[in-house]
Length: 274
Image 1 (cartoon, rainbow, N blue to C red):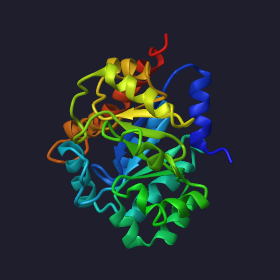
Image 2 (spheres, rainbow, N blue to C red; image 1 turned 90 degrees about the vertical axis):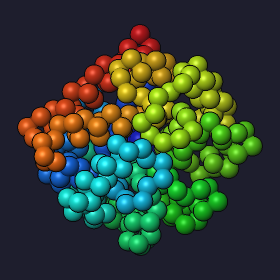
Image 3 (cartoon, rainbow, N blue to C red; image 1 turned 180 degrees about the vertical axis):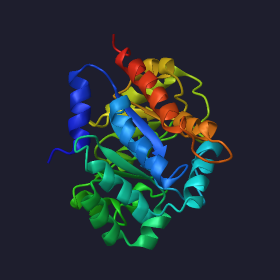
């Protein structure tokens, strides 16, 4: 079965460019504005959307995304609310892939079977659950794959050649290479090292490899896109939301702030192979 994610990466490959994968926090800064941001992403140039599931105790997220999650939770976002956003998005867009990204606790509390059924019904295409290692695949990964959801795994600079086959065994959709050790929002130290890592991962899998963490500008996207099948950008978009607020509330600049950065990044990935 060809999923929306498979189709979109194949389309980008046919256009000889990497995919632009954009991360936004669902419910940030409020439910209505977050929906408007989500709806605006494809037209701005996003190829794949990662929709953050807010959680009160994150591990890999830097301060910017932590604060985005706090704003979303304060605004009343819930797991059902995230699924509702996807459902609303699907009323007008049936082709752009959406990947829910977050931590296992909210899914576990919701109930795995109930969550998988609801996610599939809403129009979610894939899952990234950062705190579930490959050893726990029976917990969520295997049931999700059986339901037709892609399960995207993170690899890092410390994932060596002995570990990679285990990590990649049940991965589908694409591989998310975290370009550094540490948290989101830091700067990439060596673009050459990223290229070498992507090639090493590709020697173990035919899946597309997307690179995230540390990509902030169109130039970053262009340079990293030379070596990868996808470029993942999140912190700079969540930061754009924060910077657009007045007294903690959305303004008429909030949606445009995110849209303009995505359009700039999209231009960057389109120059990557030029």
